[in-house]
Image 1 (cartoon, rainbow, N blue to C red):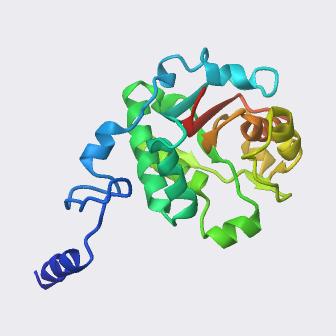
Image 2 (spheres, rainbow, N blue to C red; image 1 turned 90 degrees about the horizontal axis):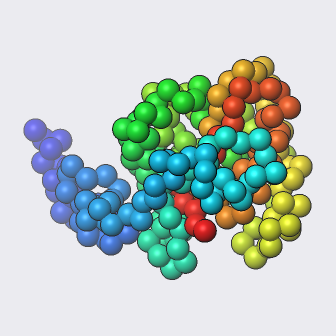
Length: 230
């Protein structure tokens, strides 16, 4: 009881707020308020995972079957604000929360038996140390928990890369085409793997990850991201 009083006092002095709208959160809310959750720009890529514009972006680049995204990216929109918080505002638990929510959505549509493991796109060790976490790993951990699957750090980013933001499609591919290696090749053989990243623009980073994994003969490779746009 004393602990509950202390929690109530701290909530009054330092209330937890929604990461998006900054409203005070109710005790049953986590990271996002119910109003912002209702406004999330969700996509329907999970309904046509093998035939959509995201899949078309990576055709010819990587041996991938399904490509899906939870949110639709729009410049200056809600999804961009979420990505900014996750990457630059020290909000790893927001990524994990959204990952769990995405996992719940996928589970509702029968995806809980599609994969053997989730594989997050890695950060270079220096960038991870500076940030304190890997946002793609947090997203994958949330999805894995909801889907009751394992999350495996099978990839290593050996070469630090420049930001992809102002690069065209070819420059993005050249920037990441040979930077990833597989840390545990034996864990790839005959596995159905879902590579998870925070955002997809041209698909160059995800394709480079898939090519690094493909040489060790997985059964299948799919992509899932938090946000993507046409």
